[in-house]
Length: 316
Image (cartoon, rainbow, N blue to C red; front, side, top):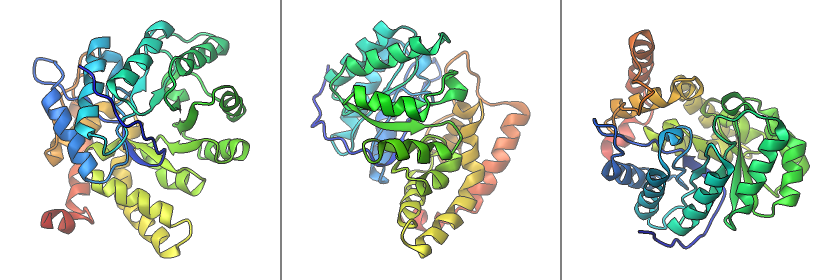
C-alpha cells in the first residue's frame, strides 16, 4: 500500500542514512524501523535516507525496499522528506525502484552507481543518467569512489547538472574536502553539497556543504544535529565555531567508526549501546567480534561516559 507525500524537498541539514533493523530470524523489523525513524525526527533531523549502504540496501529484495520506503514515509508523516537510496545490479531494476519510490511517497532520491559491475566510466555514466531520467523527483548524486570504484569528478558533475535539471544535490564521500570547494566553484548554488563521511563533516561545512548524510546520527541524533548546526553557525560566528570544534573533538572517535569497512556493524553496535536498536546485521555480514568489537566498545563506552550532552539528555 502506498502513501502520497507533500513532496516538499529542502536539501539541507542532517539526514540520517537510516540503518535497517533485522530480527533474530533475519527479517526486517518494520515496527522498530518506524520507531527509530520517529525518534530521529523528534531529535531534529531534516530528512531520512533509507536503503543506502548503511541501510544494507544491497541485501534487501526489491519488495523489502518498497516496504522499507513505505514504512519510513509513514513514520516521517510529512514532517521531513524521505530520500531513498536507489541502487541495483541492473539499470532496469534501479529505474523501477526510482519509479516505485515516487509512488511510495518519497520526496527525493539518492542515486548510487550500480552494485557489482565495475565497467568503463561511460557505462556508469549511462546508468546514472538513466536512473535520474526515470523520475521527476529531485535527485542527489552519491559519490563514493572507495566503496563503489567510480569517482564522479567535479567537471563531470557540473556537466550532469546541465543535462539533468532534476539533479539537485551531491553527497560526497571521496574523503577529499577539496571536492566540496571544487564542485561549488563550478556549479555555485545550483547544487546542494552534502558531507558523506562522518569524520569530516565540520571541514565540509567550512568548504561550503549545506547538509550531511550521516551515520552515527542513528545512535546520537541530538548530538549530530547540534554539531552540524554549530558548524554552520560558525561560518559567521567565532563563538559557534569554537563550540563546534569542542563538540567535534569529543565526537570524532565515534564518527570515525563510520569510515571503515565494518561501519554497518559498528554503527549498529553504538545503537545497541545507547538502547536504540541491536547490532544484528544480515548475512553475509556478522556482528563485530573479537578485537574489532572490543576496540569499538572501548571507544563507544569512553565516549558515552564523557558525552557533553549527558545532562541535557537526562533532563529529557
